[in-house]
Image (tube, rainbow, N blue to C red; front, side, top):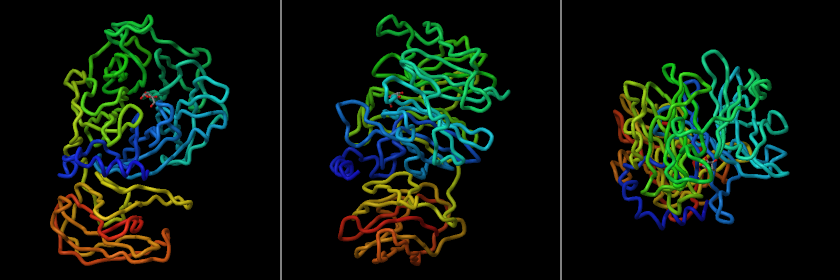
Length: 455
Ligand code: FUB
């Protein structure tokens, strides 16, 4: 983390947009995240991501665990930390790649690819009572084993039948049983016929592959039509889609939905789709954070509209991201400090008691929270903070990091880095909907930790 922070500060000039407060992509700045898998549950969108480590080993994917972030407005993301590691599968030796989580009958099932201790790709399934874990290996062994068995995507159809698709460079599927941890053995593993008309024409021929499909499928249904989104074309990957009238095909190639990302891209891309509060969103990844690239990727999101015939338009990757929040944030409820639209300089951490908090706060670092609805007016700010040193200040500013100063919260020694104390300050009365900037000021580095806030 510290290493990345140095790069962040060194590369600040690249982020002119961010400094002006306009950037929203990548949506997570505290970690390198990849392979976004959104899941909407009870009015909240959870995005599960794989995680590129800060230090890349042997110039290859260096990925040990999966993270989760949630939002009720598509612009502010709350960090839930690491929700699972490859080590949670006793039979795995690593490579925590692209997975997807789904809810059924009171449980959350998380399908992930890993490599086995005895070699070879496998797909595991973990289960939890909560969307943010802890997840436990449901079987104590892989659900599926085979060469190229990576990137599972799961969908439960209206009739209750669940399907799992996966694979690189082939595409396979099974019908999952109702328990979600076994599959229809009679049907077995079905391999798709990857023809041009089903999965696009491949300009760059590799081996005997003609179709454009590469990996990372994302399966969903909308208005009776089934969709598979996928990275295509070989590397660098673009995103494409196919549709079908049935969950098991035949698939008809649609089109490209996102070109290869030229500006700050990664050689992979990976789609995830969510319908949230009446709008459609495409999640994907790029290499846009400082020091970013093919092995240090970052999750982004764009809002888009389906064409009237159900086809998907070409979606442009932007720095600005989602233009309008899906709902305003209520600042009179306790808000976790790790709820962030954009930040510079800070990190997040998890205590042994499971508390996630903002840390590594230096002078000039800041957090932006978008679309905060003050209603008739806020006059007081309260925060939970902790520090073993002299502390610092939180300036509460409106609409930019140099915007109107509403008040300053003074944070003093609380007797320990995790010894949380609740402190308050008065504010100039504030009404209406604004972006709020918490700008951290002080003389030392690592001035204090920040757990939650409330107006
Ligand atoms: O993140 C590792 C691999 O890169 C994923 O499994 C692929 O989809 C590609 O994004």
